[in-house]
Structures are given as structure tokens and as C-alpha cells.
Image (cartoon, rainbow, N blue to C red; front, side):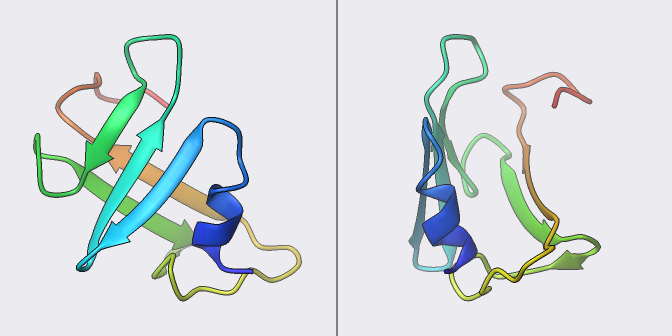
Length: 81
């Protein structure tokens, strides 16, 4: 199972990749929900397996993996997790 496939099983999360650009939709009942596109609103989406950046469309999850998905955007205050 790839990281994208796993993310898409989570309630309220949808991940799409378009031409090398990541798009994540987070359905939330607060100001931080929405659709985040890497190329708009100064948004950056990083996916990591511990310290290493990974391509979420290609990375095959392994037992014991610790995965991080960071969304840095001007729409959320700094250090908001």
C-alpha cells in the first residue's frame, strides 16, 4: 500500500497528485480545513518517512514506519499542528 492509498483511507482526508503537484483536502469543522494546493497561497506539502522526504505516490508503507505530512501555508498560523 502506498502512502497516498493509506492517506485516502483516513476520514476527512483526500490526497491527489496532479502533474507532480500535491493537493490535500482536509474536511474539518474549523478554520484549518480546506483544500491545499502546493502551487497556491504559498503552500508547501512535504511527506516524510522519519527524516527522509518521500514521494507519497510511490512510497510503499512498511511495518513500523513513522510518516509525517506537513502542510505549510499562509492560511494557518506558524507552529499550528
